[in-house]
Amino acid sequence: MSTRIPAWVEGELTPVDKLEVHKRGLRHLAISVFIMDGQHTLLQRRALGKYHTPGLWANACCTHPHWGEDTEATALRRLEEELGITGITVTPRDTVEYRADVGGGLIEHEVVSLFTAEGRPALTPNPDEVMDMQWITLEELNRQIADDPSRFTPWLRIYMAEHAEQIFGAPA
Image 1 (cartoon, rainbow, N blue to C red):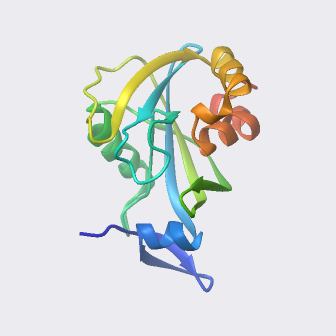
Image 2: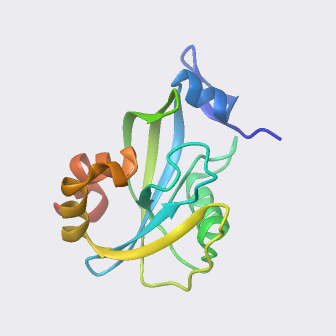
């Protein structure tokens, strides 16, 4: 079964198969969640079975809304599906746009609704989605990205370099 996500085709938002969106580099809707505990943020390492960027570190949760799905509902759905997190409150931060080559002939061109959440919720990662998790300070994350950017997803590198103030409220 294919997943259809909201993407712009010829200037109109329409449901398009997720893989087709990435093959064609179509501009599409997405969400990203950063879970914070003070200056620490939760990272997940993407499962090796993911169709792009397997094994790379990313922020707590990223995904695409289903057609007609509210972005906050999307964030809460995916936090539960990927990390087993329920009963958390997400706070909208901003909307940003980026375009990045994610390998294998696939392009992410996303209009992203950014969310944050606070605390250290109980985690039950889905092994089909997540192979590892870690809490890391924003300072250490920036240092590790500078030292070896290939370990991190393109979008996490972009968020930290270009959108940290929008996400965290101050330069990370």
